[in-house]
Length: 204
Image (cartoon, rainbow, N blue to C red):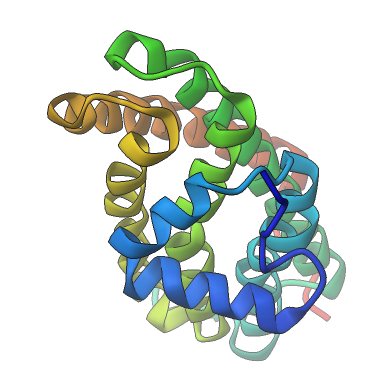
């Protein structure tokens, strides 16, 4: 099949795919399933720019507003804020690969197929909502609104049958197991991030 991913080279393509997967996921997933785009293209053309939204927003927000800690506002140093953003960005991409690997490995157990490129596309496009929700990091006080990113779970559920052939009556269980593993992965990655970043450092 032709590689017809609309996100490989232009920002407009990224926006079009993100909008379609969020607003009309039931109609968009069959289109994604018909594509043959390799993980590298999806990573560079779609995942990288979207995954950067949260870290960049949090970087700006933390420097502009600081964090509220025990009724006081703490402003991190520029170095700490940048390190946090870079670490968060890298770990979000690591999480993408790990979850895609898990989704691919679990798929046959729920009537699906082992198809790494399809699993990677499934997870990458499912994470659209979570990545876009990172924009709320611009205002730390609104960070709780990032919970709208949980919509990504529903996107994954809808796409699992179309992308990996998971039995529709088992899609719920497949999604649940994959999400549980994803939570564990993110907890571990969070612990790694804390150990790498350390404290907020001197205020500048």
